[in-house]
Image (cartoon, rainbow, N blue to C red; front, side, top):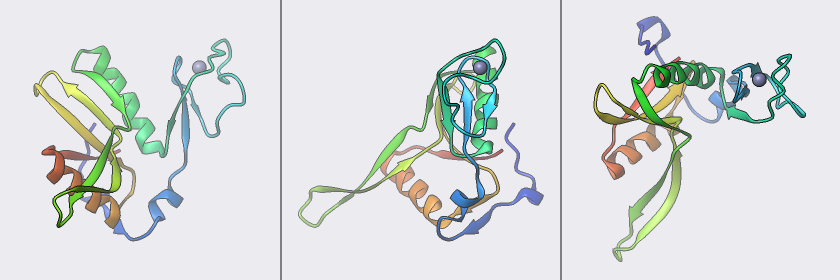
Length: 151
Ligand SMILES: [Zn+2]
Protein backbone atom coordinates (compact mmCIF):
# COMPACT_ATOMS: atom_id res chain seq x y z
CA UNK A 1 0.00 0.00 0.00
CA UNK A 2 1.12 3.50 -0.73
CA UNK A 3 0.59 5.55 2.37
CA UNK A 4 0.91 9.25 2.56
CA UNK A 5 -0.66 10.16 5.85
CA UNK A 6 0.47 13.53 7.22
CA UNK A 7 1.48 11.85 10.47
CA UNK A 8 4.20 9.90 8.66
CA UNK A 9 5.36 12.98 6.82
CA UNK A 10 8.98 12.72 5.70
CA UNK A 11 11.68 14.23 7.78
CA UNK A 12 14.40 15.55 5.52
CA UNK A 13 17.79 14.95 7.06
CA UNK A 14 21.34 15.67 6.01
CA UNK A 15 24.17 13.18 5.88
CA UNK A 16 23.94 9.42 6.16
CA UNK A 17 21.37 9.37 8.95
CA UNK A 18 18.91 7.26 6.99
CA UNK A 19 21.51 4.54 6.55
CA UNK A 20 22.13 4.45 10.27
CA UNK A 21 18.44 4.26 11.13
CA UNK A 22 17.54 1.42 8.82
CA UNK A 23 18.43 -2.22 9.26
CA UNK A 24 19.36 -4.63 6.54
CA UNK A 25 17.03 -7.45 5.70
CA UNK A 26 17.76 -10.68 3.85
CA UNK A 27 14.65 -12.23 2.38
CA UNK A 28 14.61 -15.87 1.36
CA UNK A 29 13.96 -16.08 -2.36
CA UNK A 30 11.79 -19.18 -1.91
CA UNK A 31 9.72 -18.89 1.26
CA UNK A 32 10.01 -15.16 1.91
CA UNK A 33 11.27 -15.47 5.49
CA UNK A 34 13.14 -12.40 6.77
CA UNK A 35 16.63 -12.76 8.23
CA UNK A 36 18.31 -9.95 10.14
CA UNK A 37 21.74 -11.13 9.06
CA UNK A 38 22.81 -12.97 5.98
CA UNK A 39 22.30 -16.64 6.82
CA UNK A 40 25.54 -18.61 6.79
CA UNK A 41 24.31 -21.36 4.51
CA UNK A 42 20.62 -21.96 4.20
CA UNK A 43 17.28 -20.41 5.08
CA UNK A 44 16.39 -20.76 8.75
CA UNK A 45 12.83 -21.74 7.94
CA UNK A 46 12.54 -25.43 8.78
CA UNK A 47 12.15 -27.46 5.64
CA UNK A 48 12.99 -24.61 3.26
CA UNK A 49 16.80 -24.89 3.12
CA UNK A 50 17.00 -22.41 0.28
CA UNK A 51 20.33 -20.69 -0.33
CA UNK A 52 19.39 -17.63 -2.36
CA UNK A 53 18.59 -14.43 -0.52
CA UNK A 54 17.52 -11.00 -1.66
CA UNK A 55 19.19 -8.14 0.14
CA UNK A 56 17.32 -5.01 1.14
CA UNK A 57 18.83 -2.03 2.89
CA UNK A 58 15.77 -1.40 5.04
CA UNK A 59 12.73 -3.15 6.44
CA UNK A 60 10.55 -0.69 4.52
CA UNK A 61 12.09 -1.86 1.27
CA UNK A 62 11.60 -5.52 2.15
CA UNK A 63 7.96 -4.85 3.09
CA UNK A 64 7.36 -3.10 -0.20
CA UNK A 65 8.94 -6.03 -2.04
CA UNK A 66 6.39 -8.34 -0.41
CA UNK A 67 3.56 -6.11 -1.61
CA UNK A 68 4.94 -6.00 -5.14
CA UNK A 69 5.32 -9.78 -5.22
CA UNK A 70 1.62 -10.10 -4.46
CA UNK A 71 0.86 -7.70 -7.29
CA UNK A 72 2.84 -9.90 -9.67
CA UNK A 73 0.70 -12.87 -8.63
CA UNK A 74 -2.48 -10.95 -9.35
CA UNK A 75 -1.14 -9.74 -12.69
CA UNK A 76 -1.23 -6.09 -11.69
CA UNK A 77 2.48 -5.62 -12.42
CA UNK A 78 5.24 -7.47 -14.28
CA UNK A 79 8.99 -7.27 -15.05
CA UNK A 80 9.95 -6.31 -11.50
CA UNK A 81 13.57 -5.19 -11.20
CA UNK A 82 15.41 -4.59 -7.95
CA UNK A 83 17.76 -1.63 -7.49
CA UNK A 84 17.82 -0.33 -11.06
CA UNK A 85 20.58 2.25 -11.42
CA UNK A 86 20.66 5.49 -13.32
CA UNK A 87 24.09 6.98 -14.05
CA UNK A 88 23.89 10.73 -13.51
CA UNK A 89 25.55 12.79 -16.21
CA UNK A 90 26.21 16.45 -16.85
CA UNK A 91 27.26 18.12 -20.08
CA UNK A 92 30.64 19.79 -19.77
CA UNK A 93 31.44 23.09 -21.53
CA UNK A 94 33.18 21.14 -24.31
CA UNK A 95 29.92 19.29 -25.01
CA UNK A 96 31.03 15.94 -23.64
CA UNK A 97 29.08 14.09 -21.01
CA UNK A 98 30.64 13.56 -17.63
CA UNK A 99 29.38 11.01 -15.16
CA UNK A 100 29.09 12.60 -11.73
CA UNK A 101 27.37 9.84 -9.80
CA UNK A 102 24.66 7.25 -9.86
CA UNK A 103 21.12 7.16 -8.60
CA UNK A 104 19.85 3.79 -7.42
CA UNK A 105 16.11 3.40 -7.23
CA UNK A 106 14.57 0.55 -5.25
CA UNK A 107 12.16 -0.97 -7.76
CA UNK A 108 11.20 -0.66 -11.39
CA UNK A 109 8.28 -2.54 -12.92
CA UNK A 110 5.59 -2.36 -15.55
CA UNK A 111 2.14 -1.49 -14.20
CA UNK A 112 -0.42 -3.26 -16.38
CA UNK A 113 -3.29 -1.11 -15.10
CA UNK A 114 -1.56 2.24 -15.66
CA UNK A 115 0.12 0.78 -18.78
CA UNK A 116 3.36 2.46 -17.77
CA UNK A 117 6.76 1.74 -16.29
CA UNK A 118 6.98 2.78 -12.66
CA UNK A 119 10.14 3.67 -10.74
CA UNK A 120 9.96 3.57 -6.97
CA UNK A 121 12.08 4.91 -4.16
CA UNK A 122 10.97 3.38 -0.86
CA UNK A 123 11.37 5.34 2.35
CA UNK A 124 10.79 4.16 5.89
CA UNK A 125 11.03 7.18 8.12
CA UNK A 126 13.36 9.69 6.55
CA UNK A 127 14.30 11.19 3.25
CA UNK A 128 17.70 12.78 2.74
CA UNK A 129 18.62 15.92 0.94
CA UNK A 130 21.06 13.95 -1.23
CA UNK A 131 18.45 11.35 -2.11
CA UNK A 132 16.03 14.11 -3.14
CA UNK A 133 18.66 15.77 -5.25
CA UNK A 134 19.58 12.54 -7.04
CA UNK A 135 15.92 11.80 -7.76
CA UNK A 136 15.49 15.24 -9.29
CA UNK A 137 18.57 14.75 -11.42
CA UNK A 138 17.51 11.28 -12.61
CA UNK A 139 13.98 12.52 -13.39
CA UNK A 140 15.32 15.42 -15.44
CA UNK A 141 17.91 13.32 -17.28
CA UNK A 142 15.80 10.25 -18.03
CA UNK A 143 12.35 11.82 -18.34
CA UNK A 144 10.91 9.49 -15.72
CA UNK A 145 8.84 10.14 -12.65
CA UNK A 146 10.17 8.54 -9.49
CA UNK A 147 7.49 7.67 -6.99
CA UNK A 148 8.43 7.99 -3.38
CA UNK A 149 6.67 5.25 -1.46
CA UNK A 150 6.39 5.39 2.33
CA UNK A 151 6.31 1.86 3.65
ZN1 LIG B 1 13.23 -20.01 2.94
